[in-house]
Length: 256
Image (cartoon, rainbow, N blue to C red; front, side, top):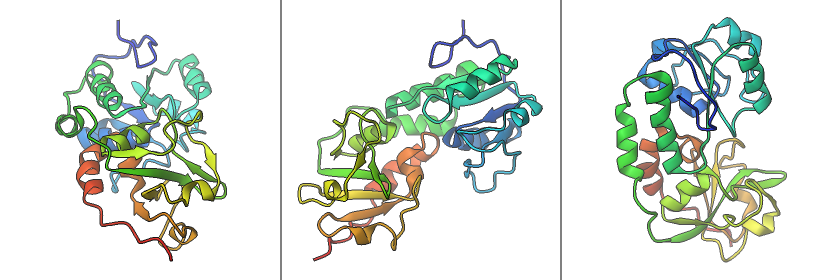
């Protein structure tokens, strides 16, 4: 019996010909490998840059009627990205949904492989093999202690049990908030701008940190602007993330 990452039985066709993706990083993967089969995506699905498919609103508020109207063989969702209520309503309407559950890089690689082989019935993509070669193996020794900000006013950071936190650790960085109770805790600026942190990463999503909005708040801790896609997306971006983040220019010096 075929089951998704949450153990829910799946009875879709052996080869999916019409797919709606509610997960931006998986949308990028599907559009890269078989664009003709991707028939719908969310407004947040920004890659590939030339993606041209019907939009079904956001990840947290998809237009379920629009999804149904596309008559998909399969809708791809994610436990963190999408609401259980929307998944349930789609299933109650007779729409097949495959839910992924991803909190680590190895989970992402395994989940994507199962998605392709078990749910989609598509060959394993070349980029997935390259990503596994780049990320397989134990985490390297820690070289610096970092925090990953995801929001401002209030400040929020990546905490425990997150894909981003695991990716950061596999780059050789210790997430200063990995021991938090919450996955995305709210913190004071003083919790980030302190002498025992080597670096604060400021991605451009979900909050759009820029050179003018983010770094100027820090007097002690150096900061680095990074593409959020390389920290949070678990599709083809995994192939880009390791070399790009590993060769990012040195962080801005802290303000005197």
